[in-house]
Length: 541
Image 1 (tube, rainbow, N blue to C red):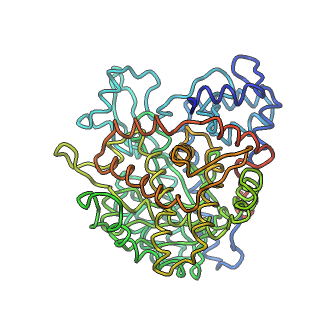
Image 2: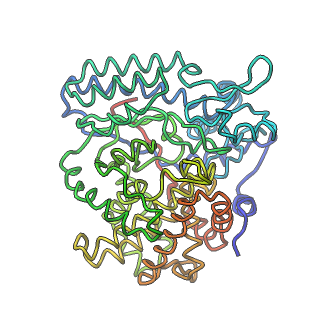
Image 3: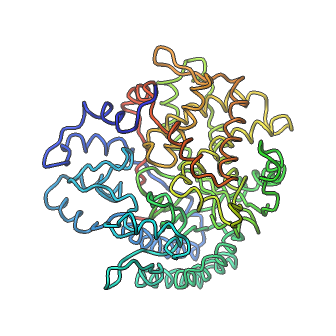
């Protein structure tokens, strides 16, 4: 029977955690955890860029460093004080792990403290740390204006809650970032990139990101940047607040063009979704560009702990209704993870005749269709006569539910396309096996994290239906039963989203986002396999 996360963590860590000074772990344990992130050189083909493009990249990297500084403030109260304590009293490994996690809490282990006794605040640093239950109810009520994506909640001189726009709260840093983006725009020879940079600079000063999000969809440049406040994972209390991040990348136009045919299938995918027709979103934009890129530098939300391999933005449903969303595949990061993490996991945990079927192409395609699936299904919905969005109704559960949807719909889309001639029949077996190995890869991130939780949900859902089996410590997947079970899972999640049903989402998450004994035992066999990458940027320090 599945166990609660707290029980599993106690069992899983009891043999390795040796504590001193309150909740501070021994240097040996910290060094072990640091070693689970493999130092990996990340680089793109920068040397072949024009001189002006290289200077543009330098400006974008400098702006990205500011995004990281802002995210630190959003993520960790008293960051500088804690860091100074560690520098004065602890090992280099403790400092490195603190910087990996952007705070003294381990993101892999449900934000358990690894330094000092400070408990992680669910709302990170977006809200006062001493919120009462009555004040939480005030924040939940949308009529009070505390649920905006781009505000920090603080107290005024009377102790009452106030919402401070990012543009004011982070004014000095955002002004500096805007200046750098405008300078990069002046140096760029690409009109679409320059237009986005100028508009995004203005967004930093006004908190209105709609126009710059629209322009970001239209960038047609070898150098591309994604920069600003996007995801709401960090806000574990309500899921309201957007975290700053940045991706500086170099586009491969040839490989990107090869994948463009798949975006034409988006309306067909929507029509085929296994939900009531009234829940289908047939009005979403279908421009939905696909970019294959090499990462040059990242910062902010995406730089913490687990490294992103792909993303699908923007999240603004107005932009998605008008243009769809852009899918960006970080090829160099993806290749590194397949080689150094996914392949060894398959060799250790899968039955031999299935481990041989793991395929880099299937990993890449699952990632692509995962990102495409974020642009499918309910977005803007109606609940009790109100026009709203799925993310607002599912609150803190939204991120994990949405990641579960996209992850399950990745192979669902691929299997839908196979009879149309896009993939050979061998894709069923390769995709199933690669998917199974991928569940172990992502669950290791910790099921408190949205992607880890999503993979725990899928694992338990498929285990319950005997699609996943384990014998003598080795796992296998029923290739023939996998497509139908996926269809059932996709239908259940999409219905929860379409109805904006928080209670159903909570029941679903409570049931499946847990760590069963067999999964914990499997993870325990992965000693020596990196959990993730620790990026070292060759070109940009």
